Length: 113
Image (cartoon, one colour):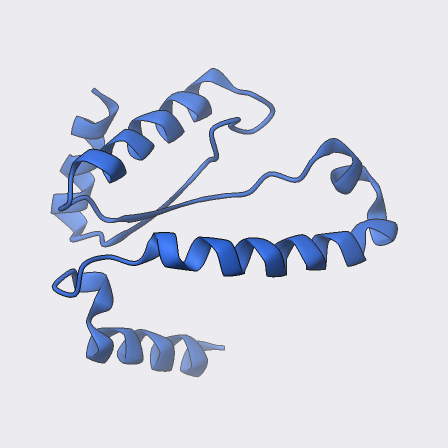
């Protein structure tokens, strides 16, 4: 049911990237967990579903360690980035792999900063 609502907006706004909660949600909130679960299912079963990325929630120690946690956070970011990039790849015909469009987006982001 959640995916039906998502598809309405994907079609309406021509969305090609979704960023969502991870499977634990924010503080375990049931609605956040349901959204993450539904979107994850769609990503794995529907090849036309937009590229979807899940936020990574920090652990309790990382969250409250302030500046002491910076080295670990940087390490974890570097490690996760390397391991997740291949999983985000879509087939060659997918709109998210359109090099011209991606270059335009990159130019837009740089010029708007």
